[in-house]
Image 1 (cartoon, rainbow, N blue to C red):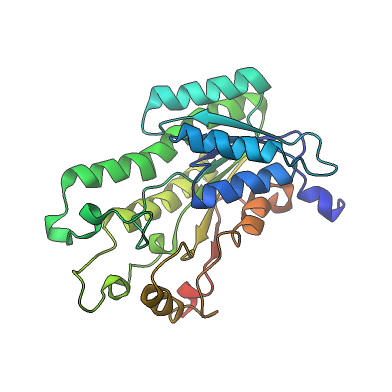
Image 2 (image 1 turned 180 degrees about the vertical axis):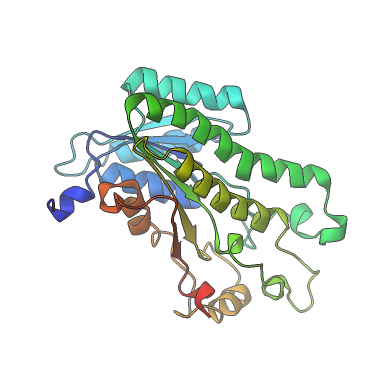
Length: 281
């Protein structure tokens, strides 16, 4: 058995993180950077990606001289944009070792990310255009990125993919959490559990499809992550978890590094659930 810290060392590897400047994506970009990887912060928000990459590059980790962050703008719903992302990073660095699919549309009930026009619809009235937009990002975008990365990983003889799912890909949303007395009814839209369940199916498909190719594909399934939610939501959500609280945004980092590194070398087609016990009851 190798030295345990070495199993988590990503020195010299290149990792692409879609949604790399987002709530969890930014944490994943930092984690991979700190483990020694060349972290490609791939995001539709180019300014946010560049800001994060610049910040990371100012804080090189001791003993991790290979660490570097690169910002790349990408629209994962566009095949040409995705292909250009992977062409650029492979031309510049000659390899793509890790893909983290973290880009997502997820209406959250907090001041920064609430999409009222999205969450106010019941299922029967939900607009087709919003459904299609979410499928394009949450599922088709992952499909396109896995396609592009898979081609490179096959040609170079291996790689790792980690797809970010959700507990709502495993169990149905508890819509009671999104109802507040005296306020209009809100809902977790149907697209979210649908696409996140699709992520798990795609993960299993890819793991078996790449059998014998030295390409591992796993899913990471977070529970609810605190993001300045209103107190009544936090209390209601927390009461359903075994640990009695929501996750902090950095509490997925260890699991992400495990799946991206050689520490999980005998895992593929698996789903690592980090949900505070939500799905255990």
